[in-house]
Length: 399
Image: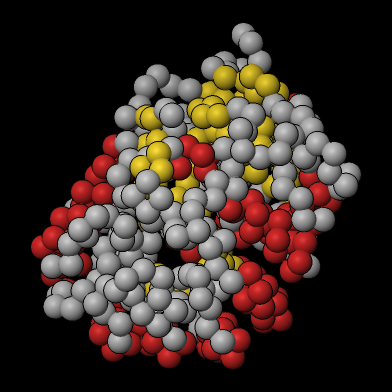
């Protein structure tokens, strides 16, 4: 397992990617780009288009995509990190690195709730959130960006607590409902304070998942008014269909579908979002590590399931895990767009898939093969040790 002590530091870099067979933008409005090349300078996308029209001189790294698909790096909207690349929930080392091999380049913490002896007092929970924010900013397992430090709100917190956390660099709330605050009015007040200071928030939805959590039903979710309806398909136990439909229809917040949830409820939520013409609200997470383990291919599996069983084009399903999530979580990645972070995953049809192309294979329910990942314009992994072998994989061109 590798790590990057100082992301983005070092000599100037220029990455040129050429010979891309299919370029997925991450943008629902235009999921496929008419382009075959991309240039990134110092970890940011500088230009996208046809190779003949781009300035590729002076490249420090050149990648020949060999005709495979280029996508924004996948984003996992819902993880529960604790310390570096170790999780006590499964006593497993290297889980973040393993997810990188599933194409995930960015993760968002929904709370460091598996910390042994997690403090519930206000001073302790603030200290833990700041510590997590600091440590995961300084230590990137294999370069993966983990936006950690997500306090779980507890009774007695005041507006000043959220101001203090924001000034310390904390910008996400852990799942509302995993702590002592489980009622709508208190949650709404605290979420509003958090939003005032720039926090992005999410709420536990459905039945309890860990000791101390409880049922959070549609009425509480609506009243709390978090930015994201966390695992609307349950983590693991989903709400009844009528409550899921109510949440889809009565608010405009993010509809987070997770791997560690109820798959039927995920497909039901997707159908309602389609009927409402609001697919831009759909985002993806794994809710790992969890009792059912760590799923390095969890985001790819969600993309494949939602496309093949939910009847959405594969290129649209990829947007759920890239541009949609980036917008809902206010992240600077997830789109192949000038100025965005140069975080990419190279994909191709798995060997011997019945699908004739990458998109065909995903629509048929197969997982794609990951051939390479790039974070901040730096190659972080090559052929995945976890996905099915890709038909083709990109290569780094020797100087």
